[in-house]
Length: 413
Image (cartoon, rainbow, N blue to C red; front, side, top):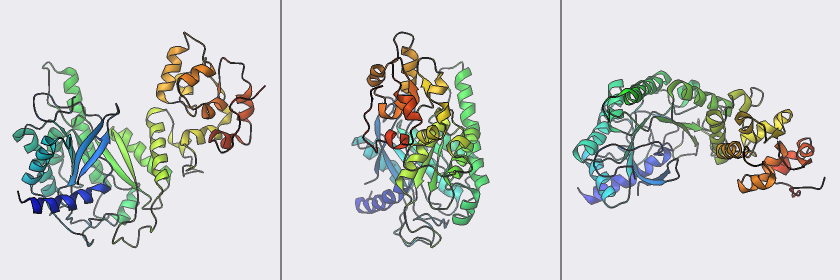
């Protein structure tokens, strides 16, 4: 391998890959059998698994040449950027060399569309196939499926990768038609549907298998990415699309990427970056939809389609629904507790587990390390504490909860 040529390609194609946010390796249980880089136990990104482990991935594009001309993409056909393309063997050797030097634990591979979607997808699948079967690599592999690639190639990707993802790109079909007219929502959905069907089949086979280790298919599931702020679509549109994708295709995760102006930008695009706090609020709202039992209309009602950037969406809902509070921590159901601002799923589980053995007092909440300033106006505890009810009706509640005013946490009755 010519190190100078490879170094240039790595510089160009690692930099080009930085715009793809959807490369967390969460959910992988590893592949069975002996081999290098098993997940049990310039181009490098760090991702976090659900148990808090930080893992390193080689994050690159196969090529930044592209036949598509998506307005928001720095690698679009009409963009004046330096171009490069890896050969299949080069990606395989780079991955193995980086692994042997203990730089990485896996590979995230995406690509521009070279010639056509099937040609590009074939090359990406071949990279993963050689890593698995020729090199014995058992590390994490995430392949980004190319929009418009055949279902057969998407299936092949799932047989050799831990995760396969297809980007939905933008919140609505109208947005996609405006900024990426060569991509089609039905094609994206078809690829997602193919992945879901095969993932479901593999999970059923594992559940009913008589042999120990049936073949795996994308064991870390599928995800997608959506750019926000490149179009005027409201947060409600974003979350409605995400909620539909979760329900229809059982995605592991939707990644939200705040739009940032790129070199040689299309005049249709905003000249200012979308605030990162909006991206953060969307992740919080996404969590409420998936794990806290909230509905879309509760988080972003029709008459308020944008999330409040100053406070998190659960707190915003609680402030708009004060009649639902205070919640008695001694008797409330899990569903009621999950709606209390400041109480996460772990805190709720601990409260439920402990209240049969000891009273839920302020001291008990402090030991659970819940944010008391945020929680107390919305709950009743075993303490004689009339302050929450008074705070709940106070016009200054919002300022109190977010700490904008320095009110004492506990006041005399």
